[in-house]
Image (cartoon, rainbow, N blue to C red; front, side):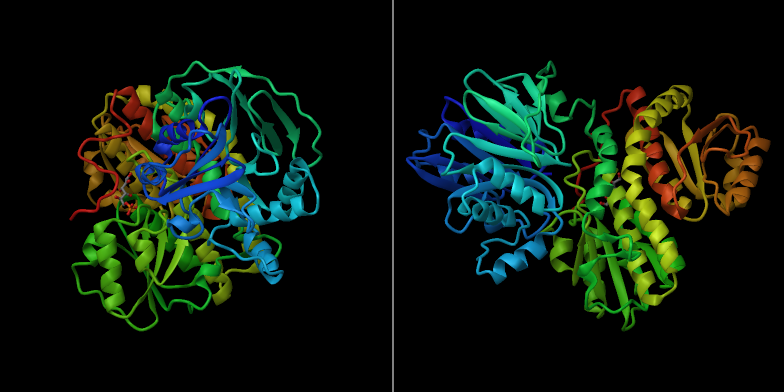
Length: 607
Ligand code: F6R
């Protein structure tokens, strides 16, 4: 998730921008840059890596005359995290500079068209098309407002962007669609940013911009208009009372909770440009040239392993590809028998987990092709895979992985559909139904999350005294049971076991008593009667039960927790956040440090 800041005022702009970027550092980034107008020239300074590198570049340069400018911290989605891909991006004649947060879905089509007309590109980013399109509109004689409107009318996808131009010195134009952008209203100065902390030391008066809105700021004024019609829009100024740390978390108490709430957007971002519903097609161009695997080995650790295990059910059922899922720390130390035609799928949020990396290196040495499913562009997994599919979840700050798993499940669904289309195992109608349901998930989940939180809070109060929990599930909900248990132990330090519901009677049932509750995943699918009968066995031993199920489920347990039903196994996307939320609320109720569980580091790069 990139960070954006824009400043127009009476102070030297560059220090204000750098300070703002520093306050956005928590969002994660891999390069940074600024653009400002000084002595009638457009200056763009960028650097790979941390802000200190950018500051070094600016050292010794006289940058104190500029009183307006823009700055950006980039989290790579298209193109490696290197200087040429850092923002701001300019048009060929360097008359304007653009910073952008989001994904332009149809950038390749626009880029091809512009290149055919002789336009030269200096980066591998989707953002650069915006700079060239804007310059062309201005060349046609359009004023900046109209040039923005025309350009944004051409692009599909998500954006928050800000532009400075030699044609409009002292002015910033910005717009948003599905990516955050806020306006800070000061005295003799105005700000734009992707998040409030960027300008909080200067003003607490904020205007929240909505999708489809464009804003023009200078030092003395600001104006919001409809991006399509340019009609003025009246906006209310809100006064913020949060401190910086609360503001960085978007008002949420912890990053983990914020990231749980980000999941609707994560699904939407992951699907962007990858879905053709009418054709019943999941579009993963990354796979072009890779034959359908004869056997697939999924290698991962922790939550990513659970995502892989879930993917196995879909890959086998929809695509008929024999799939085996292994924890990377086992795979790497045994003698896996790999044959020509085998493919290894390495799943890793960070792309730096030592065991996963070792597993994929072993697979490559043995001649298998490796697909990396990874969230950090330019990470070791991404660099060393034959094919990389980016999960596009944005940086994960909380140590407990939540939104990353959601993005991994989304991509695995698309992968299973893609391979299923290739093998012909899943029907076109099922693919259409699946994609239709997938596209609806973000709005369904968005509406559901606040309710889910309330329920999780109530249940956390009820169960805060227990010292053990059993999680049960069948089919694709078995990996979810494992994940629910992992989350609970990881952040609340309550012992939890995840089990295949049908396996419970083979031993663990001995543990059940009124002090050892069960959290059951009981979706209304073909395995529902089986889960129900497992739960009767629990009840026979006096065990308390929370059942996560669908509306109308016929069951008598201590707590029924209904979540909306989606197509086939996609109900997973509406149950996973409930598990995460329950673990979060248990931990919070018990006063644990949710974002930094003890003994855990964000990226397990050491052995
Ligand atoms: C659990 C968690 C870990 C990671 C695991 C793999 O909340 O965060 O279990 O999932 O360490 O990390 P990645 O996906 O970065 O390889």
